Image (cartoon, rainbow, N blue to C red; front, side):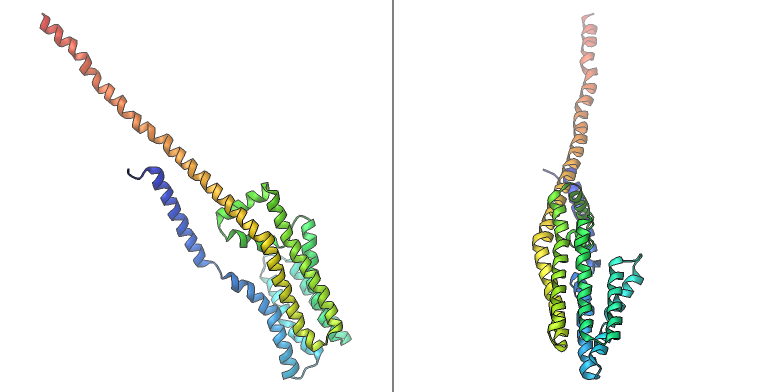
Length: 287
C-alpha cells in the first residue's frame, strides 16, 4: 500500500526536526569547557599565582594572596560590564573580595585574607537558600538550559511542568537548596582551616575544599533533582509530540473521505440519462 498523506507529513516533520537539531548541536558551545573555565580562573589561576609570587618572587604572604586574587576580581568586573544589567550576586561577590583585601592589607593578617574567600562562599550559599524561600531559586538560571538542551520543544515542556507539576517545582527548589547548603558548609570548613591550618597549606587546601564542595553538590543535586527533572521533561515533550501527530492524522483523515465519496455522486449523475432514455425508445417502437 502506498504512503499516505499523513505518513508523508510525519516523515517531513521528523526530517525538519533532525536538521534543526543537527544545526543547533553544531553551533552550541562545549558544556564541559563552560563548566571548567570558571573553575580554572577562580581556583587554578589564584593558586598557581600565589605559589609563583611567594616562592618565585619572594613576596610576603599578604602580597602574594592579594595579587593572586586579581584575576577572579577582574572576571567578576568583566561579567558586570558585559551583562545587560547589574547582576546583584556578582556585585556582592566583588564587594566581599574588595572589602576582604582592604581589611587584610590594613591589618597585615594573611589568615583574614584566606577567611574572606569563605565569605564569598557563604554569601553565595545563603543567597541561594534565601532565594528558594522567596520562590525564585538562583540556580534555575543554569539548571533550565542544562535540562532543556536549548531546544524549543523541551523549553515548552519545562514551562508546562512548572505551571502544572508539583513534583517538578519541588525538585527545582531542592536543586538550589542543596547547592546553597553545601556552599555554606564549605564556608564553615574554610574559616576553621584559615585559623587552624598553616597559611602555606591552607592556600591549596582551600581550593581542594572548594572543588570537593562543587563536585559533591553536582552529585547530590544532579542525582536527586536534575536527572528526574530531565526525565519528566522528556516524557512531557514526547507526550506533546504525540498529541500533535494525532491531531495531524485526524485532520488528514477528515479531508480524505470527501475525495472518496465524490466518485459515487458523479457516477449516479452520469447514469441518470441512460435510465431515462429507455422509455422513449420503447414508446417509439410501439407506434
